[in-house]
Length: 636
Image (cartoon, rainbow, N blue to C red; front, side, top):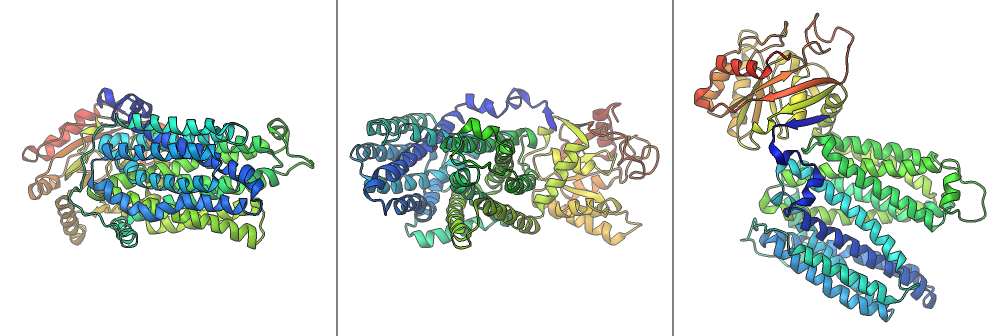
């Protein structure tokens, strides 16, 4: 667990504090009301088709339901690329307001169509709602970094994901309660119109966000624009792999949500109320997992949560197959009877935990894409994400048809198959982008062995070249600093430490620079200084341990003059930093050589104290040592 002190009043606010700011609250309610309205409208339409039009067109109701679902997704293929261009070209708050005005118009026509029970008109309007959502999507995620600070990005995305799934759930329940079969169509017509108006009213308070690329010319050809938009997403390989990972999440989500009604009826022998309970638990799980991300990541983009999320999704997906054996009943059980049956709590726990780990999985990926994508084409990258999400949702539907229809698997077996598929996809992604695994290992180590507190870590600049200097206490020093700092750090590591098993994978994946003394290995020594200069020229953040070795007595040894040589060649600020609380750990040399004694403590308190940046003209090895010593004080 990490906390941070000394960041001012704003830093003390949790993600819920964003709901009190104009920078976030109006946008949150705008997207929440939009997601809610989509699902009220869609569920009301589906019920009308199944129980209204279906009685007149019995042979066509199943076809109409699938056509309606497909028409809602189709606009994401047709319009997302164009929407991404528009979102990058024009001011976003006004663009959102116009999109919400379009929603009011669509819903006004929908209210009339509900009154006349015109299923075909409503299906066409559902297509228009899909188009409206396709244009809103790129603005929705690209505006978050415009208004939030770097340490608020994860919390903001968590709130949006939580709000989206809660809105979906409430929309489904509301659409079911005021459906146009059991109630007057005026109810649902009035509801969707009022919610649309409320969403537009909220959007009027969203602060302006300057257009990042006002000079671009809109290409209206959906085919060429889509291909070009996906090209923007592929500019940064790790971003593109993250988009594929998000799309895979929607494949899984679509599979679970689509088959949940049949799973409830056929496997659990449950009624519609039981289905609503399962859907609530699953959606609440995703919302809770999303909210936990800020605490678990220390308010930074923590890719280590992504593998943790995929492990949990598969683990509890597998368990769902074994969780329940339905009793011999000749009727569909209500909630009370279902909860009294053996295995029911386990089913609910599995679905809830799949949702929670899904939140761990999805939130860091969205934040990562926003942070790693250049602002001038960020909306187009989000548009590419929406296109691929829609594609994988269609593939998920086809997979359900193949496995359940053609191969005649049961729903439980299908859930088992997609859990296994998730393992295969995760292995592929983490092999191609080992940064995920590296961050996961760092997160596990720093959240099981130590309790890390940091003071004034915001003194490390968010961008631009800089060098961190730190005392060297244990083999875990680099991992703890890398896990605490929001910005990626390249470490200059003493070569024997760089080559320790497991740590070698982490440091190599993090592009650490091994170094040795000139006397021991001149080639490694010279290459290290060249790599250091190159990294600083490219604006990277470096960390080195000027003592050149781990302390053997807990005291801070002499700082080698190499830091002066580095700063003379690349005049950049130097940030002194002190690690406290690691002396005496299993990975330090206290009482003998490190890693040779049985660990005596876990969950130890470790502190990171950060000093004021030192300008390059004032840098000297001895002065930096004094600064680090003053930061550490007597806490070793």
